Image (cartoon, rainbow, N blue to C red):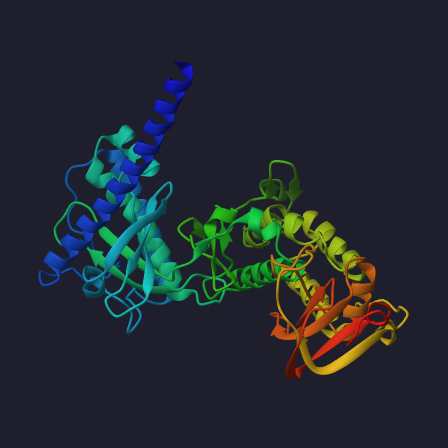
Length: 460
């Protein structure tokens, strides 16, 4: 009976989750329909910086929170040098009303995210206020004003839209357009149309080759360098978590900017500038203008260290590069490096890796192999190594055939290898290592390398 009850409870939980997804999808579809009806009625493509319609009587505390968020949005729009208008040629309410195949991807404290197909082809991510989200629920519990609370949450999304319009970087998800509607309602309806990405899966990343994990860390450092020197000043990601990032075509991008801040902490003395984390605290200086020096940059950098560098940088790295990586980890973990020095250290590692200068002097081993030019082996399942670019066999990034020979010698199963035409993001070729001599196929651009010890008993 207990097992049956547990089974019913699990089925009920699944049904509840499915019901919630359905409700969220219906809410988004209702928003699309509302937008379509209002396209001709004004406000459909409105400006986020425009004065809002008069508010219904609201509790004083909620009115003050709304005023504060409006002030923050106007200040941000002024600092950005504009009123928040959509970029020329961007998607608008008309495109949104024609979108199809809306499906919920996920939701958080403030927003719900869905996928939608555009009428002209392609797909986008749609962000809108999550009316049943925790921020709105907690606001309603405090003030008992659902429409005003949804408006309060909408200002966070408008802030994110404004930031995405002004910040252009490969590490920031691209804003394709927006639909803004404040036509007489006591709340704002805004939908952001963004570049579609896939969630960042740290467990999967840990299983990828070191070169790919280094790419993730390097792109993050480049993003933090940009944020430290952005057109809006130094920007801090207050909610810095892996879940705030997505992967787009193999590239890391931050997708949530509503909790970003362009303000650095004010201070009167150095004691006001302690940067606290769960396991460490760092004393900073109070500048002559009454701001904690570099606090935004340092907060971003330490979060990058504890959420990304610690897990992705050291494991299975080439042995000769490990001292350089350890120095990066120690320096960022102690905040001895700022973002400029961190980027320089990463670029040094990249140069050593791409140039092959990291390779330690070793005996030349390629002489122990017979090379057959103009042939390649039949691709198929073979012995596996870790971390491989293929789950079917042993496919690794190498600098040269000489390095591939050293790898093959170090693996007892390996009898031959081929340098493929495939290249990684650094331009290095991928080498396929095999445990037996398979059929050879003519290929003018290929070379097969076979151990002399293996070929002595084989007929080539």
